[in-house]
Length: 294
Ligand code: HMN
Image (cartoon, rainbow, N blue to C red; front, top):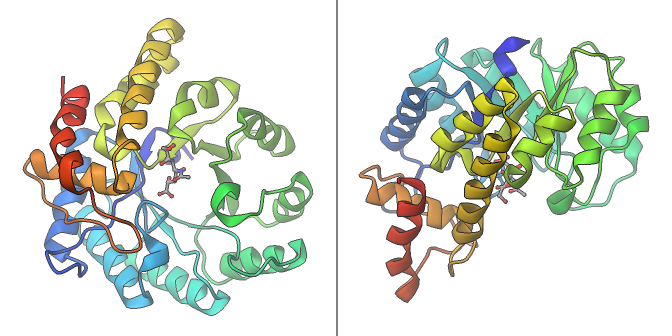
């Protein structure tokens, strides 16, 4: 399971100038992140704007990333979708493409009983031979993974980990405590990367890694070396940057994409209802970029 340990950026949605999925730009971003030395990619999750893309678009993204990087990086496909049918279709497709693992949020929109959530994740797990990672993100889905459900699902050999994006770092510790030693817990909140690792997260998947992979790779290096004062300093820099990324009038992802444009890598903008950065705030992009690219 070492292939899941390290810095795993959540892959950004890549659009052309008219807002359609861009194969060229997907490949450009995939290769760029590969060259940075990250461990893997989490494709089609929150940062991939999965919720705003149809099935064909999500399949296309999975395909172009795997064409660029299969065998070079650990590739995790997020297949959570409104219906079980679509999730299973995406899961099977990701398996055909050679993805290493699958992941999914719980069902969204209707508030369903935990038994339905169990069934949803189980049907995805049973649909392929691939390992599965639960995506726990209660602030967007309204459901926080319970120890009770985790314990039940652990009977399925395919379940190898949880990507935990809830804010209490204690949740990471509780999931680790409830599962066998080799079970992987991924830190989700980038603002707490170092604390997440210290309390037991084995690895991290995050939405801001992609815009500043060097900083997360450095933080990880210091954590592994047991140099916590240096790790904390990097976390402080990271948090100053995340607050800046979230301070402009568009969504955080549009700020990140504008920074990418200034670096000469154009992956387009965001899809509505997410809003692009506009007006005076566009002038602030360079300042944020310089906080990262010092
Ligand atoms: C993904 O699925 O794209 C991300 O990994 C999600 C990730 O956990 C992010 N959480 C949310 O968006 C709620 C964080 O990386 C987040 O972007 C970061 O901590 C900045 O707030």
